[in-house]
Length: 206
Length: 196
Image (cartoon, rainbow over all chains, first blue to last red; front, side):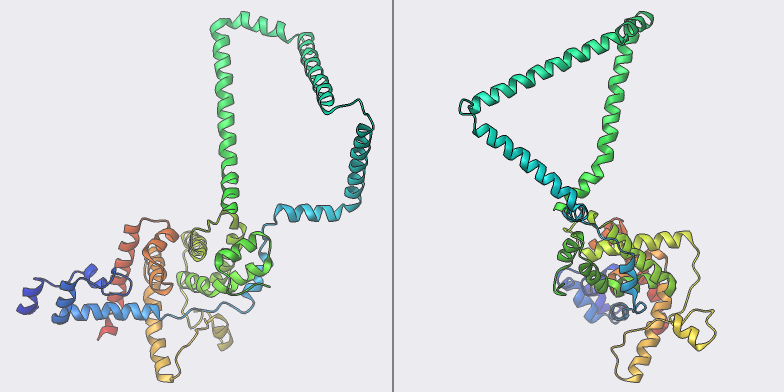
C-alpha cells in the first residue's frame, strides 16, 4: 500500500467491500471513499478486477441442453389436476341416459305439483307454509318421543344408574370430563387434518 | 392455443384447469435452466435428466400449493434443489467431466455422455479460450461444498437475488450471503492461476 492510499482510507478493502463492486451487489454505486481508494490503490484494484472476472466467467457459463424429447418424457408422466366441473361434465356424459331420466322425473314431479297447487283456488301461500310447518313440527316431536322410548326400552338408563352407583359421583364427573377432553382432541385432530386441504384450496382460488 | 407470451402465473392457472399445452410451455421454458442447475450439482447427465424430470413431475403434482405471489421459477428451483440435495445426501456421487463419463471408452459413448454447450462464439480461438476457462470453472464449482455450489450457481449463473436464493434454499438471508462470500473466495483460490 502506498502512503497516498493510506491517507485516503487507511487500509486495503475488506473482501465484502470488494464485492460491492460486482453488478447487483450494492444499491446504486459503491460508496465514494471506496471508489476513490480502488482508483488509487493498485492492490485493491487487482482484487476487484479478479472478483469481476470471476463474476463474468460464472455469468457466461452456458445453459446446457437436456436430451431431445425431454419435454415429451416429462409430459408423459405429468398428471394435471382436473377441475370439479370437468369431472362433473365427464360424469354427465358417461351416464347421460340416467341423467336424462332423472331430470325428466324431477321436472314431471315439479310440474305436476305446481299444476295441482295452481288448480286449488282456496289454497294460499301462507296456508301452505303453515300446513308444512305443522307437519314438520309434529314429525320432529314424534321422532324425539320415539327415540326416548327406544332408549328406555334398551335398558341403557339402568346400566348408567348401576355404573354411577359403583364409581360414585367423582368417578362419574371424571368420566364426563374425560369424554369432553377426548371430544376436543378429536375435533382438534380433524381441524389439523383438514387445514392443509383448506389452505391449498384457498391458495388455488387466490 | 397457448401463447408463448403468457406469464408463468397465467400458464399455471391454465394448468390448474387441466390444459396440457400450458404445462408443455412451462416445461419448454424452464427445461434448460433446471437441467443445467441440476447437472452442475450432480455432474452426471443421466442422473441430472432423471432429477430434472422428477422436478417437473413433482411441481405439477403440487401445483395447487404454488402461491402466485412468488416467482414460479423460484418455486420450481426450490423443488429441484430439494430433490437434488436429498439425492446427494443419500448417495456418494462419482464425478463426471463435461466431456463425457469417465467409463466412456469409445467416441460414441463419450458423445452420448457429454453435454451439449450452447456457443455464442464465432471465432475458433475464442471458443477454445472460453471452453478452457469454462472447463476450469466447472471443475472448480464441482469441488465446492453442495450448499456453496447451489448458492453460487443460483446467484451468478441463474441471476437470482439473495432473497430469492434464501427462499429456494430455505435458509436465512445472512447464511446465503456467507455461503456466496465463501464460495467466491474458494473459487478465487482454486482459479488463482487464471489471474496471472
